[in-house]
Length: 167
Image (cartoon, rainbow, N blue to C red; front, side, top):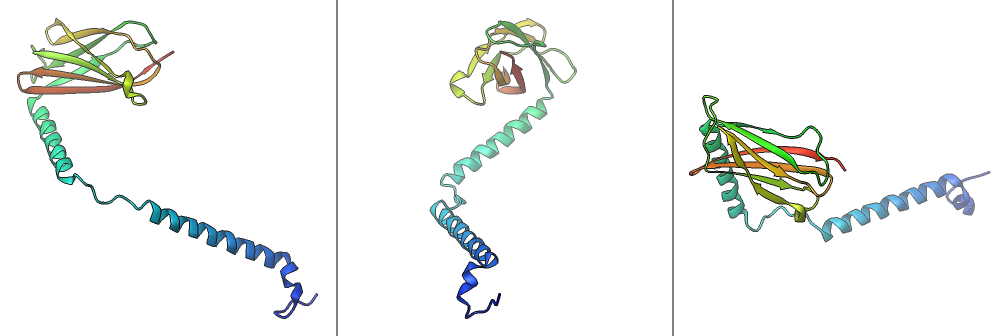
């Protein structure tokens, strides 16, 4: 078999056909990617950059203020949490000398990462010096983010933990 540029049989060669198909797919994919890049360009410019910068700076200030308080805390959760089962959650918050704190308010927030309509909160009641409890029932299984927010005057301490609720 004689393969040359003048041979009309070249398009019947499987290697030539494979190379042409590969070239066609390669160029089509590049054209598609170029089209998608121009259709939805990266959003590198933020409309409200100043407000977001101020919010970030405020968050950093709150973190520094919280560290300067010297408070520490621990969230005590049940070993096995189940749906629609009321269980007690306890937060123990201590000061610089590991002494329990008298706080104005302690709130329990439960956030469902996959569905914010299921989020809820509850007030925690003091049950001793530096210990606060609340009875909570979760209505859906899965991951929940627990945030305990303790306040005394202008001072605020935040304690976070992710828990798993079994069906």
